[in-house]
Image 1: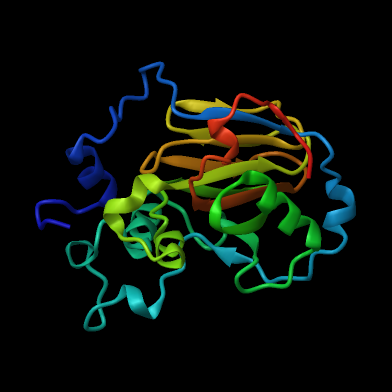
Image 2: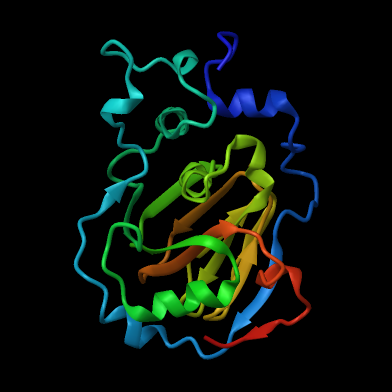
Length: 234
């Protein structure tokens, strides 16, 4: 980032790629439809045990010469985003989650069916569990892994799409915010998407774990968000 900026969020606002005004009633996400025959209770029991991860943990690759300095980081680096989280008061104690990704973990076969249903090429799928009291803070996705997987570059970012899939019905205190749109009261199987670069967050202020899923890949003519259907089966 340019040296005049000390945070990723301030830099992003300077690019004017979005209005960055919480008072504007903008439409920042799109409802795609619902997978009607999703039975997550059967899938959930098959998920392997995992250790939780943190949204603020910094890794060796985030550092330069023993120090981590915002101006040394690319705006698309995860390290720059984590520095913002820490600056805003998040810690290892309030930003934890469990994650299963098909590129590294053995996942139930039902996830492969979900992935195929979405109609995205070079797709990958991930499942997330968030316990009460945790937040995945305000951030945007760079899709760096999806671009690499498809053999694309940063200029091809608009070819990538991510779908958010709710695996269970909404429960009290479960919140997703995409841009200025706050999602609640969802049903299991509901799918949403949004444009690359839009800030979003996920929080569990409730009394039960929140399970979600994301499918990321290259857009095709068969991609669900391009069609008129609102009901799907896996």
